[in-house]
Length: 230
Image (cartoon, rainbow, N blue to C red):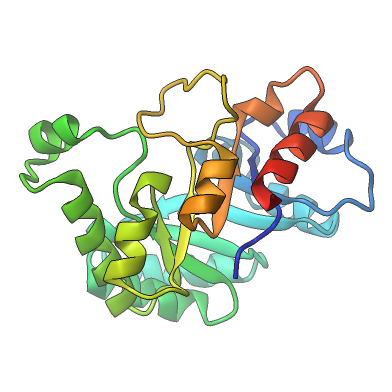
């Protein structure tokens, strides 16, 4: 089922900046936010507890990738924080992903990163020595993610239809790299507008700088939400 709230990437370096940003929104407006590595490593688990106490939903984007036992234990810790969704790298393999599912339990959504949206096919070939097409690599990782019992994947919106065909209609496709028409793409290589992501079948979208660096973040968020929900 599609999540109607765009996920806001809280890509801030400090707890105080997050507090200031979230304070711009009315208390009754419950957001879905992404807490990534930079913020989590700076502020620790307290940032998750703070955001959850405000009533917001949290996607904890730490992209775990380690031996299965370590990932299982780490996920058990994250489960205690009450996160709504978190992720691993599909490149860690089926055994590792299944261990992550076991550690996290069945409540929160657990998804896997296929290929980062900053990765081009040329880079995948040269840096990872994966010589298939980017689409084939993503579809393979998606199938392995489903095999491990996870809920879905992080992927480019350009790959949603391929992934749905390789897995199932209810297999989650969360797409970062979303930019309103005319926005700078930054370091993302594969981007799409909210309207196009909706049309192509994305289930969740993640938007960062077009909201967090906007002159009026609340207005920017609501405009993107309106485009996403149609």
